Image (cartoon, rainbow over all chains, first blue to last red; front, side):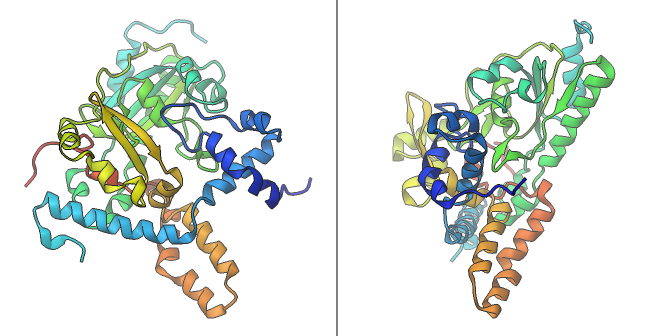
Length: 93
Length: 286
């Protein structure tokens, strides 16, 4: 059996819709759909939807956003520490 | 299999869970998941014949962890594994003492970022808390907790949902009246490069938007996603010396440490919970 490879074109066509419908990005208001339910809705097979979803989860943001995450946490953490301990000197420059 | 539980079995199990280290314990009806979770992520999909789900919560960060000046401390001090140990103990007791099937819900993912069973949903349905505006389920008495769940064929007595949610806290309602925002919305605003959007209406927290993709870059900065991103960047980098900088650099090194200690290092962003008045102890520390 050949290794399953997702067609990049198919991926590009469906990635936003699959993510929106999936349970990966849970919201309070609505239940996410299973991969099979998404497949039925989009006319794809379940394995393809699973692959699109998993790749799309990682494809939301470029690597730069990971760097921004580090900076965000550094700043937020030291600001809270300074506030909670009443030590403005702890704030990040 | 037995049809009925001995009298007091639910109480006995809860006492055992608390003695084993749980801060809170509750029981959800397995069928109650059907309305909220898709197929393959419901108790009976994982354990055929499931009747209840026992949920334990605890192992939360200490007050000192919350005020630590390094954002990396909370992630490397992650204590999820401690509550998982309690979950395993509960599963063992159900099978050995009562003779019913008990499936400890694995803390990992079924595929991609999707869990086998939503532990937050389980905690809500077991009456242990309610979802906060920021996302995590908060318990009224203890705030932010880690969760573990056991699916079982045992017909334990089911708990009702928690009465009033911990979110929004009174301090957040005051802040909303004053400034039109809350601590979690202010620290991570979706319209300014963050993840959260929401509002308070008639004393209730309503989430209006949430950027799960960006939240992932913060919660799992140095984890599987970060590794894949740097790996892709490295493979695309034609220059050997530049490739080395990426592979040997701080980001990749931290990521590899985190992955190799993955059971204790999964959650890596706590900023919306750090500033949440309902999430951790209100007792003043010195």
